[in-house]
Length: 113
Length: 113
DNA sequence: TCTAAACATTAGCATATGCGAATATATAGC
DNA sequence: GCTATATATTCGCATATGCTAATGTTTAGA
Image (cartoon, rainbow over all chains, first blue to last red; front, side):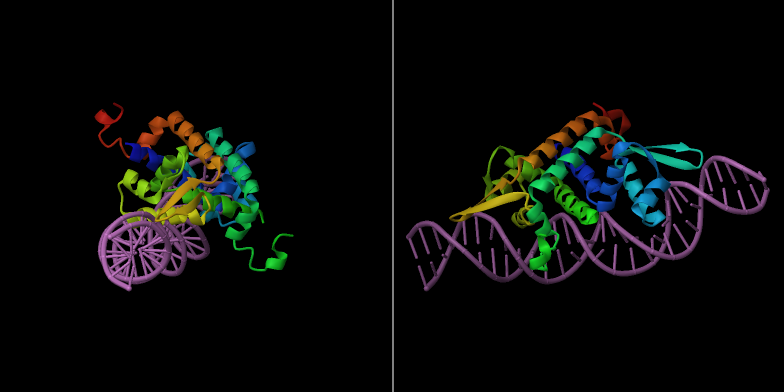
């Protein structure tokens, strides 16, 4: 039981564990957007974005409503936005290590500028 | 740049995206524990736990210090605990959907009890 | 220095994930 | 009904992840 609770949490984190899906949620932070608008903002393949939206839908992180030809997405629960905000705080607190983790120290003399 | 920032966040979420690693962090919530203590609490294979600890170490979510024969782990930044707490709130808010997601509705007449 | 204990790492395999290309579905307008 | 547009789904493949079993490494103590 405790185990399946953690599986649930892990599933949510898994849904958040991709830069494109994080970008989608951040774009939706200020209100709903159509799938097309997201595709344009992201500048990615339509199918690819649609698959990421499917992940967020399956894990119920976003809501969608259909208006005529298009589908508008929104963040279902502001808690998710709070999680992303916390992660931004975390990022700022550990910027240096973050850069190392991202492998941007390959050119040491350039890295920190 | 914006992209690699999101990659960093995604990497953190990825590290959180496993029930065993969530369990480890929750066990470490109240203070440090040795690897052995974690293995015992989790009741899992030694190598398996050690690999999950390696993931948390690599992503810098935990600190470790060696004392004689043992290695003690602790959560590096309480923000991570806050993230887990937020996720618990999220879980409670969406308990019903969570159960469906976990596939525990297979026996509908039993599910909600 | 030999052994046991505590951890870590590697190897090999099975499953999951992410991507682009192609295909399917639904709706609006004619 | 036909066509175009918006979006979703499927397929095939490449890479990543997780697990167990086996092997390494470090330290304490006899």
